[in-house]
Figure 1 (cartoon, rainbow, N blue to C red):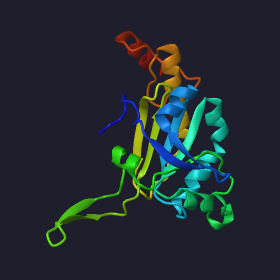
Figure 2 (cartoon, rainbow, N blue to C red):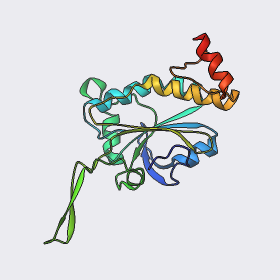
Figure 3 (tube, helix red, strand yellow):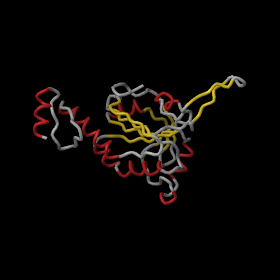
Figure 4 (cartoon, rainbow, N blue to C red):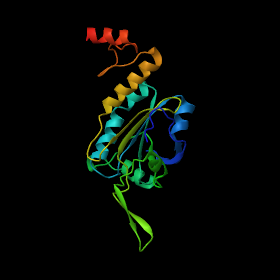
Length: 212
């Protein structure tokens, strides 16, 4: 079920930061009460391979997100304790030491289930135990959500496990959505900040296409 154009689920989830503090985060409420956009990105597991490259890439771009009034939140189904151990593991040992944004610890998978992003590829019914057996690791795909100041999702995307994300594309999407909010114009293909946008009518399209 696509969430674009809808409110993000109203649910609080355990989280951990680099200081070892455990607290609750409600993504919807964070956006609304702070009047900020939120980038929430899910990754499969702590202490894996592609995942730390992504977490460090978001950290490297954190200043750019903050300039745009965007809060970055990472998330997986690991526990807060595992997050903290990974946060204290040096980068040259595959750790994420130096990451400063919070990490959701959705270990009960309540939010991941609501979002339907868990790797449960199939299920079979076992008559002997009167229960279902699931295939898959029951961890999340690389799902990303961009949420506006009202808590409404304006972008969602899901990558398979081996495919790392392009952090700059999320900055571009945020710039484009902010332009729409502020100018009332729409952003054509490959639009970037500083480029020409257009009005959402036949005249606007015709003028844009004739000049590009």
